[in-house]
Length: 421
Ligand code: AMP
Ligand code: GLY
Image (cartoon, rainbow, N blue to C red; front, top):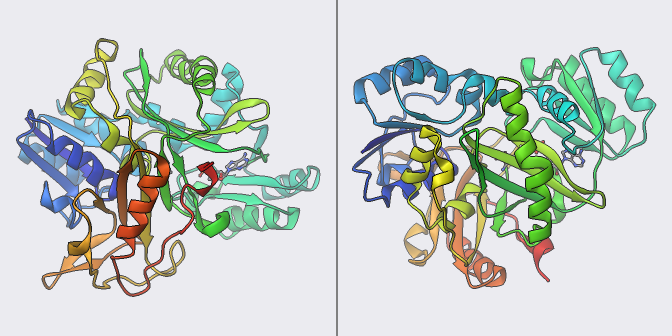
């Protein structure tokens, strides 16, 4: 079978590698892909993942048996609808369902309507009203741009001043463009965070193994929010009891709520959770695999990913027994100096040949230039290792990360620290 993957980051590299191991797959394409993905898939670097018209044309010429739409932007823009209308089998939610990530206001309203636990909130399209609300509520307080903002639209403000600055940046300075014309302001929750990615065909929901992301740029959870600087799986805060409560109060109610709204969700539904003193609450939904959660979750999958995608598309997920490896996994992201703010590209990457055979280096922002492997993004590489436990996985990761060098490279040295006993 022939599969076209849309996207070009570490997540898509992990998806491509998992699919490449399937005996059912004989051809992989990836648009745009990257220098790492190119080792398992034919890539189309000249077409952006948001150029939907060109992607549709590409699909029409390649005629894949399945298209896997991985990143948020094309899903939110409706790539699944466009491809399905032309008869393609697509893994990824339709536009009406992807809104669960596309609009934080939609997600908050959905949770309020269906009694799904989340932080208290109010949304605003008027700057003065938003400022008045902040002044009437205690800090810390959280400000979120309504629309997609590359994982950078959330400010956990320690003070009211900081919150007002965030509202000003979104609504007046328009740093997130149209995504910030509406802001959600919500109560600041406390507790460990857990990411749970779940396969769903709109009827059955099958959570994958849990993980923990590290969103802040620097050690000790300091610095600005990023797309994610490292992950571990499993997440020790996600106990069996918490998992059962999440299934009953969050996962199933969300899938049912989307059906009740006429927005059946098929694909990967990502639950960003906080385990508070009052139980688990939803921090965010994503309409796709997380990045870099995928880089620790999919390597633990012990079932053919192609079978899982087929079952979701065909609406027969309940008939599949999805298995997971027992080992722990960790992923440490190596980023370009300056990320998530401005950074330089084109730095030569060295040391990949010194990495151990049992470590996997997922490429996120890499390209070939004049025959050399160079940086081409903020998050450049993710090194994933397995271990009998988290400590072993992490020590293998860091041993290998230290062998990889490029000008300005940085990484967090405390991935998984809060999860270790
Ligand atoms: P998001 O982009 O929605 O995942 O938010 C980024 C990060 O901001 C989350 O991973 C949390 O660490 C933090 N965050 C978001 N909402 C809240 C909240 N209501 N209370 C505390 N922290 C939050
Ligand atoms: N790692 C968080 C996300 O994919 O949104």
